[in-house]
Length: 265
Image (cartoon, rainbow, N blue to C red; front, side, top):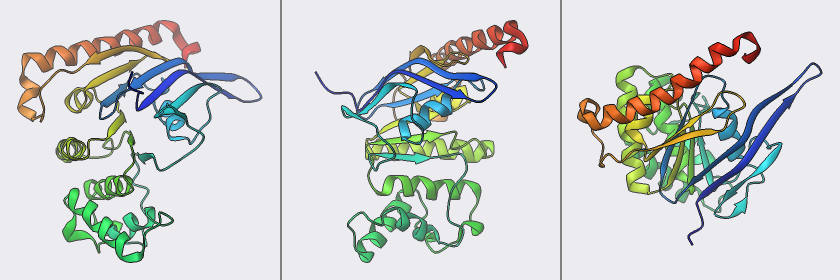
């Protein structure tokens, strides 16, 4: 039996204060195979980002386990690359410098770091902007640098938390196409958090829908659309059916949250 690339098993996460304890996740489980692209969707505050943060090793779970290639996650490591909605670039470094920074302490000399950085900037279409500072780049270009940086040290898993949420609609579409193209070339495993159902269905092999807080995986929808994906698929009956299935599952949670009233907030 093949070991899953990523195994999330029965995660629970509690946040405690003097006044109350909030359970963000409870019995959240999800498995990703090697080279699989899975998106997580759900209502606002359901624990999507908390789940991703635990997988990244940025937070510890209250209970439960996260395994990468069968080994427990014990903190951030180079087997997982992370891309956030905010670009998290160093403003005083060039695009190439930001990518090179991620490669320090990786056993590479200066020339090799430069070559690897250039290779990955070319991969995301920024070979002509390697000397540009973040202030000279558009939002989409900054996010491309962030993706190049996360890929530069060849992680087994790419974790993405609403990476295109701040972009305009056209740039967002272009970035979705770029991401799926890069994923097809690198063949890495991707766990992608988004609130956009259309985006989730378009880019993913599988969409996992979370319940309201405390979050757990309520439903998994297999997206059996052919690859490479193109935007003319959005008008197809097959896409519409998958979109509707995911949206209805989230809508059920939204209605349930409204029925619970203020105590659910």
